[in-house]
Length: 597
Image (cartoon, rainbow, N blue to C red; front, side, top):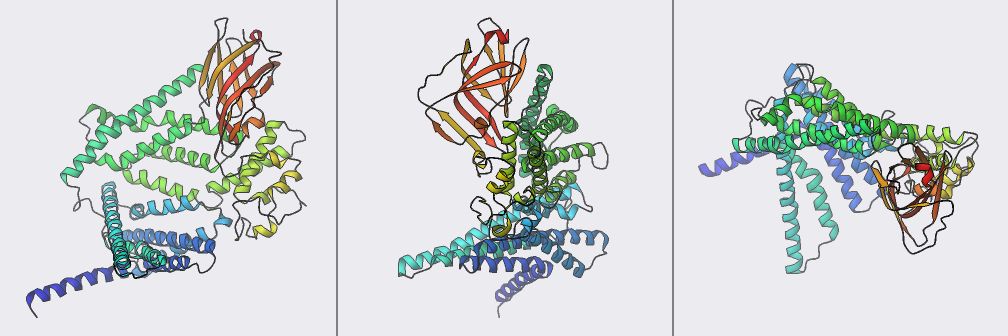
């Protein structure tokens, strides 16, 4: 055998040894991946119920991800302290994988948010080795290595799957060989769920103290530095100035933060933390703007967090907790903790807690009694019962109760508010999200879950007015077209072309020269002049409307504190979240001039 042949065989043996090392290092992870690949192929062949197969597939994928995080975490702990053997590491990986699978399989009973759980488990992979030690520089390098390995695995998956598919297509086109479509699906499943992950696992470093022997080259470091100093830092500072100016405006005019301010502050916080994790190690403090950003960024957060807290307090107090509001509140808490940690010298500038705290918060929020969905169900159930158990309720409260009921229908939790002795319905057509599995209480939803109509009528509510709430659509809009005569009796002043957006103040000049200020806030319209301020409740038919067009605009009369106001609508739009609220309306407003002098 020639020297070249011997070298070739040695190279192949080294490659086989590297894959053998992957099998020995991650046996539990690979076992979960093999099971997921098997279930995916069963799903392609339509063997067994599709809903159960999809749930098993997602559960196995989450199990593999959780097992990988546990393996890497215990590997890092072993290298630092040498107290854990390989058997214990694999046992911990198996337990973590089983927990990940159970959180998905029992998602109805645990009220698991699957997408949030999956995102948290994926984000936990680079964080896990540094939960018990290490440095921020090592974490950043590992994050870069894993990202680069993922890109290579994606390219390998595309080349392998695409190359074999191209060969099969060529055989079909050139030689008339019939290739069933299922074969392509099997090929994609095996490459995506097994071969590409194996390639990615082989590229994960065995050591996690990578700061010394693994650095970005000069060109890459310079590119990240430019991104942080010339793009991220200036934009974040401009964003912070805008939020602070808005806070000053609210203070001066005596207005409360709008509902949209919560999402704006959350976007600001996410951009800030992301920029710090990715760009901070490469940003130099020589430039005045960059130096100010690196030194004072924790002080950019208190005012925006105050705006977010006020907006959330108002919305939750009025409409209860929803998963979106829960996540906004969790984000506010995470940002407050990250900012507070900067006061301790040990954690100042360390990017590990900036990544670990949000990931752990997402993981806790994805399931269980402390999770977003379970907390929202409790809040909406208590809110519904508090309204319907009142001896008398106004139309707005009735609309809010039906909106809460629509949300509970979407998450299969109607049984929580069903009155004792209510007749159960076997008709699940009203429950769009129910499936042939177990409901949140662990029983068959088709046999024991009451329908929305049953619960609503048991509490003396009209279920036909639920409208868009819980119908699956997050937004509604309506346009009033056509011509119609409207009687103006009782009004002497018409304000035409009024356009209102939620949270924004619109000023309309009166003939006397005074300004009339209008502000749309969810289910109310606030009208104020120099001497008078009144808040009008909008009727449920406006905030529970469905999308479409209406050719006959009508006069809607509002009354509050002895004042009257008329609305002739042109457009209406809003959201069901879960309470139907108006985000925008336009049209003509009728008033009495003497009421607003």
